[in-house]
Length: 317
Image (cartoon, rainbow, N blue to C red; front, side, top):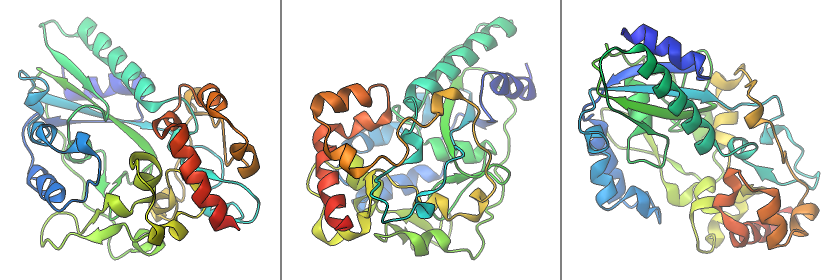
């Protein structure tokens, strides 16, 4: 089976982007370990420790892997950006990726379907393993190698035609498929994402090769409102603004997203677009569990939402 046939199957299974990368270690592994050493992962222990070493070689997930089919699932919607919603309208902001069904479930469902379709078309037996972002794999690095896009200064994978509103997934297979080539970096001299980040989370790498910027998770609004379990540092609270779950600013200001397409997948239809602060403040723990069941918002937990709301309400006053 050719790589083009496999990518066509991926499109038929609901993925807008698809490409092939070799299942071998990448130079980005060394930079990833350096990023961890500098403490930029914060409290995200699932990125560090022994799982960090596992990310250095995809064959730690599937020893027989020879190719990685990287896919992108569009989640952008027609709703306005957070930077377009008036700050005085009494509304909070939830990151666009969490508006619909939990992407882990949707992307894995598509990957399982893709594997099943492959099995019906490949004459030789093969092994496979699906990976979303819960598995130790450098998703963006392999997606770049597979030609899906370049990694921008905002650390997102950017596709020239479709922007960056994509969930990434990967299917490791023991099949030998012809790999794609990474596209050139087209950020140029643009610094809109760097200038727009309210907490200065996008910092120079200080390296002469590879990406010019990386993300210091300890300053990122998404990390502060989702991954961190402690109090949000007082010095960073004003920058959180109205964000009660995640942040989209660095993607919203990116010129490559100015004409980004919107998804037609009902799984990502907005359930809770820019909810009112007074409504959120009135929710109890049972309400939270009922209203946000099956969405990524469950990640922060009820206590995390209460913490974030306290910061946002003070900012809005």
